[in-house]
Image (tube, rainbow, N blue to C red):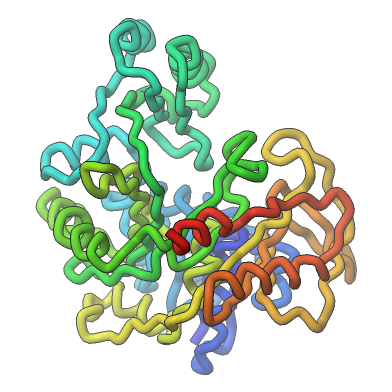
Length: 422
């Protein structure tokens, strides 16, 4: 089989590594991939948003199955375009990807179908939004409606910060057209949990829960990033909570999308807050999370391609999806200065004797040399029998990786370990 994976980050590297375990796959193409992915797949210089070029490449190379991993091409309709030429895909159609593509849509869907989420108001006019903030409870959360590279959410702890957020998104167009509409919602408190799930539009199979670490600095300080590390499973996500989420959130979401004529197939990511009033949805993603994928997939014991194809074919209920009983930890090595200004172009040294998995996110090849080429450069993931051992192993392996200007958090997983002790 010939497989095409759209995307070029650490998430895609983790997906490709897992797919490679299937012996029926003879070739994997990554569009565009990156310098690190090049060791595991043939990288082709076609951008993830260049839908016409992706379709043409898939046709020319007789691709048997395509995995569309990032949000942008899903929202732009990559799955629809590939399906139209007879290439089966993993990922939702455009009309289902709106669940992530529009926060206004997803909030209205949850309200309509009684899916627990934060109270909210929608605005298309900055003046009206600022007027509303005069009486809104503080802290509050301001969200750009559309995709914003995971950065379109601002938690405002004062009224002045909230007004500045509205102006930045709606008037200054910090996130472009994504800020034409905004959601202002209630600030929720409690432990956050990420639950990725496989779904064929009928059956939902949650993967192992995980905990992301969004802030750039230790002890959750500094700016929000795309994620500085993850652990799995998340100790706050008990069997009891999982059951409640399935009954009140996961299945109702799938049923709501079906009722709207927007059947969702692929990976549906539930970003949850475990509040004192029960679990609530903070956000949906229409694809694998990054870097959650880097800890969830190494724990998957079933064949990934078989599971993916079951979501496409509608046979997920008949397909075994098994995860190991162990734990995983991923620590992201970033360029110092990320998520703001940073220097890149430094050589990366990856020893041959690494015991963990290295998933490359921001790197390019120059001849034989692998050079840094992004904010988040790579993630080192380790699995073990316990979370404590997985964290210890991930950091030990990360110590062997070298590049100038390297920065990483030293406390990934510590909050989870404390939660386990309690």
